[in-house]
Length: 315
Image (cartoon, helix red, strand yellow):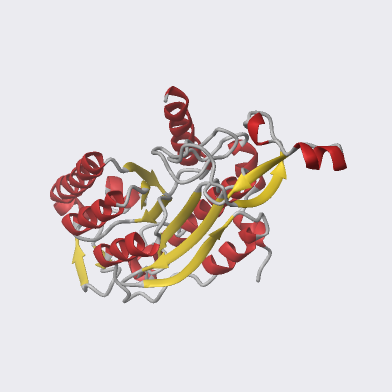
């Protein structure tokens, strides 16, 4: 495996500072009071000890261990496990944008970061934060099916396993996105209530996407959605006044056209697509965030995680 630190920009990690990944809804777990547990009282089945941290319930201190070691340890039980989070990353052909552009179809002098690379950095940063706060992080890579699934663990060394999964990379250009069966599979596969972070461009029929999200929410998962789009896709601005050859990102053909002639219709269609997805997420109580891939990674992460932390503090 390549040096995993290339996925964790020290500047980004430093800027994220003391942020915590807060569960928006009640999940199966707790962390020093950060996550509200759906369980009341402790399971009678002892699992393990962990060191005491400020804010822990003093009722669960093991005084016998303290007497032997002169250190404070908390008893953990089977049902008192940390927050579990699956970061699901789209690896379909469209996630290779703008790498897939041919020379005569270039829209930038210098190609920007690909969507998949941005998604990989985002997934790595979220996993790092989760593991740092002793929560369990896992990974799912998908296009028309789940290509790889890394079970959640809360061992800090598990970050390397997640990054190894991400290094599998984006699929070939012809792989399409099929969200309904993927989200349905995740709903069946992730049995315990968890946090599900989905990173994709979501270029799929909105109704199918929302149906898949509804299945996740019906299992009481906390769903956080990051939609990654490039500036060109959001604004449809092009520097040269000339004809461009637009290429389908998932084997959907080509179109040669003057962007100025279709800009108005394109922007109207794009805004309607985004509105439909955003409204559907709001209805399903899914946390939705649109991310411009030219934006520094710490900006959306800081915005989203700070907002969720404020929500959790108000509960």
